[in-house]
Length: 430
Ligand SMILES: *[C@@H]1O[C@H](CO)[C@@H](O)[C@H](O)[C@H]1NC(C)=O
Ligand SMILES: *[C@@H]1O[C@H](CO)[C@@H](O)[C@H](O)[C@H]1NC(C)=O
Ligand SMILES: *[C@@H]1O[C@H](CO)[C@@H](O)[C@H](O)[C@H]1NC(C)=O
Ligand SMILES: *[C@@H]1O[C@H](CO)[C@@H](O)[C@H](O)[C@H]1NC(C)=O
Ligand SMILES: *[C@@H]1O[C@H](CO)[C@@H](O)[C@H](O)[C@H]1NC(C)=O
Ligand SMILES: *[C@@H]1O[C@H](CO)[C@@H](O)[C@H](O)[C@H]1NC(C)=O
Ligand SMILES: *[C@@H]1O[C@H](CO)[C@@H](O)[C@H](O)[C@H]1NC(C)=O
Ligand SMILES: *[C@@H]1O[C@H](CO)[C@@H](O)[C@H](O)[C@H]1NC(C)=O
Image (cartoon, rainbow, N blue to C red; front, side):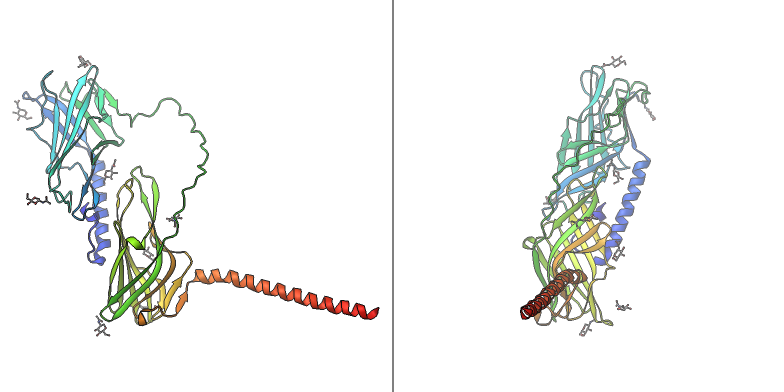
């Protein structure tokens, strides 16, 4: 998980590997997760079981990093979690309530059970976590122990039955979201084992009444207001031997991502030059421009092919944070096999029209009023501009229209001249 976390810029080349490793780790975790829930049991002094639970929990804990960013730590109930025997108890009828305390690392999850009438429930869920756990909370600004709780767990079952919930069941506790899934719980166990009778959670209950056909809701007539085009920023990078990047462009990023409910969505936003810092590096055959704002780091790397004497955009790296409904809000993507904006050295590439640079299948950049030049920027000014195809196509329309108009004028003129000659001839006959 930590490899997916946003890190300060490190060697760009290592990122795809890290992301791949992260993806592999996540897959592996997901695999184990799907394979089994973790079993817990609380017994009394006579070895009689009073609480049984099989749990899988995904935690998402928001915390602040040293760089004052609030990010979520995402982790699962660890495979190594154990019943904390000192804190757990079967309780005493009418005196104290049964409690299941689960320990994993410095983290503790407590479930307090009560019963009234014909049902029992988790009356309170408490989660205690330690921000000094640098594996779960890298770069946390605080290193204290935090305690959050909820008395609104909605985990409740009929007396003498097993509570069962396969679908995700979210319990919010302050900055902690605990998503329980594939769980079985029973408190006040009578036979040292789960009851055969089950109480399903509301998430698992499929309505038995024939589902009324979904009303045909008219498509919302208010379309999402399209984002205005981005403001055009001016950027330059200068190295020991002069300016190596000069750029003028409006940038709009388009990222597709999965939400927590597994629906796909697009996150489209503009880079605002007013809130963007930039810097970069100049090398003989590589020049980079890094743009960073509050939550986004975007890096362009240009390469120079000395044999063809052309420069091109070779690599784009993006780090950003998605809207909070994203399954994984941290985005880290890079593609180093690009060949965009290819231009002869000492010339500039210009594209006033909106142009889309597809970086990966999930990430594209829309550029507006772009003009760039990399490597030799003689006199810190753009060299002669090479227009993009889009602009040339755009120019074709006015040319065609202009030519058509000119043709029309010519026809009218000829018609007029002929007409004049005819009428002149007419006069002569009289
Ligand atoms: C829990 O996390 C795992 C691994 O990150 C993921 O595969 C799974 O879909 C998550 N489940 C829920 C219910 O969020
Ligand atoms: C409880 O059971 C464990 C093994 O399951 C056994 O080692 C222990 O002696 C038992 N304790 C009592 C009090 O019966
Ligand atoms: C729970 O149900 C059992 C029978 O199913 C009953 O004997 C017991 O009294 C009930 N307990 C409570 C607290 O209602
Ligand atoms: C973290 O804990 C150490 C030792 O307990 C303490 O010296 C340090 O000031 C703490 N740092 C923060 C950021 O709270
Ligand atoms: C964003 O990208 C998606 C495809 O991934 C595309 O359908 C959509 O039109 C794009 N939106 C903008 C504003 O570029
Ligand atoms: C970069 O170019 C300079 C001047 O042309 C040259 O002295 C230097 O060796 C080059 N560096 C590399 C790594 O090619
Ligand atoms: C430069 O371009 C040529 C021709 O496209 C290509 O064969 C060569 O591999 C390129 N060199 C580099 C360093 O990219
Ligand atoms: C990187 O860009 C190249 C060229 O556009 C494309 O073929 C390749 O699929 C991209 N790689 C990824 C990981 O998206």
